[in-house]
Image (cartoon, rainbow, N blue to C red; front, side):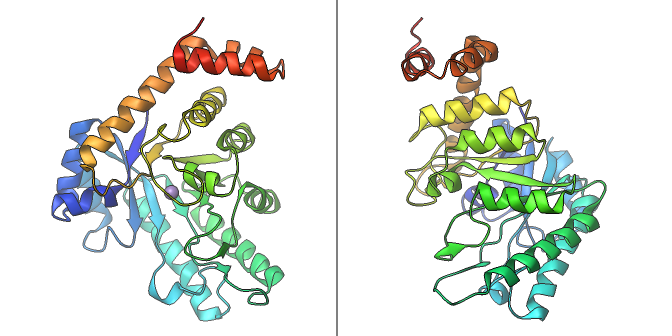
Amino acid sequence: MKLATRINSFLPQSKNDLNTVFEKLNHIGINYVDLNYPEHIEKFSPEDVSTMLSENNLKLNGLALRFKDDYINGELGNAEDSIAKSAVDLCRRAIDFCRQANGKVVTIWLAHDGFDYSFQINYEKVWNQLKKSFADIADYATPDIKISIEYKPFQPRAYAFIDGMGITGMMLDELNRPNLGVTLDYCHMLMKHENPAFAADIFGKRGQLFGVHLNDGYGLNDDGLMIGTATPVKTFEFLYYLKKNDYDNVIYFDTFPVIENAEEECVQNIKTIKEFDKKITETGVAKIQQIIDQNDAIKANELVHKLLFGCK
Ligand SMILES: [Mn+2]
């Protein structure tokens, strides 16, 4: 399994030293890393990052854009042309850095493209602006870097623009770039009242699933709980579709241990995903599919009994 975890959960408990974080990750069995751009790499060159990672038996999965300060009223879709342009430039610099540091994916979560009030934005204008920007960014990243859109329905904005699987799918469809895909964040999907497995099947089947952020929550908030703790049945179904669709990219634990020790919390996530995976493998993808194909709620619940309680 290709596993990564949230660096910002480790930094405060590691004297804010990236190398100490990498040592800890290697020690507990994490093999991939996603870094925030520019936040995590400000002091480092791409070569520094490559060296630090390889010394700790880690590989760079990629970079995740973090837009701050100037971007609070929108990034790619900002109404000010100069700010929108600088957001695209930041993405281009992230692509350059990612390529030089041997990463594969640049993840874009548009935290501030959205709105808080009625009559606040021109939806069609923002849509066209985002489309043009994503096309530019994906073409700049061609052929070796993937661009992955991470959607979230709200927070920090009351309404995000790229808020769910539907509009993300529209964007991918209209742009039709082979290196443009999606990162599914499990908690974000629960916030949108999506069933995570649904998007995992649709995007997974189309070869558009470039990243997975696994965590758990209660749906009202981006809780970032340990995986499989709040909605284990949905987690089973989600992981089933990853396996069914031969998902071979990184699974990133996007969890927020604050009270907990970050290493212990991550070890628990690793243990949990291995247990889920073992149970799905033992039950069998073909067998599970056979049950789904019967479209029968009672049979589906029998499958849940089997997965959770080990019933025959
Ligand atoms: Mn995430």
